[in-house]
Image (cartoon, rainbow, N blue to C red; front, side, top):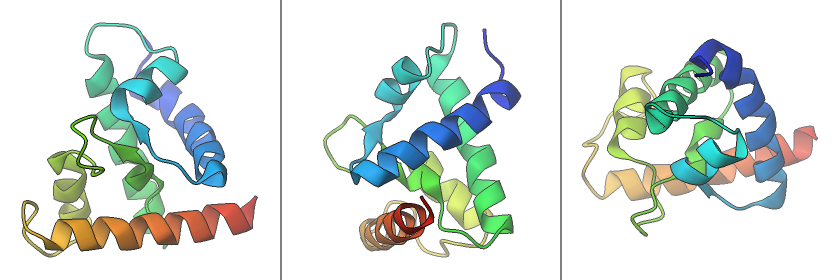
Amino acid sequence: MIGTPEIHSRMRTYLQGIAAQGVPITYQALAVALKLTPPKTIHQVTEALEMLMAEDVAASRPMIAALVISKSGSGLPAVGFFEMAAQLGRFPSDVNGPEAVIFHKKEIAAVLKYWVSSS
């Protein structure tokens, strides 16, 4: 199993490429793209995403983890994304409320603007 510290930098690089394409990716597709292996592949993804979120907030950047969405068809990340954003002081609202949709749309727009102009 590849540990989170080893994957989070590869994940950032991969997500920067996704930002340039302007399309989100599911947690599962990201796990496959990074060639993560069981057990707990999605857990590995979420741990690395949380590390990226903390780094982005510390660096005053938009959270590139917003590009990773649930396969449920909602077009939103899992609730853990919003919980982590709240812990980091970026999302002060109800993680299950309509504010989550608005927050995510704004964060995606900021991510695309930041990472596309940075590449």
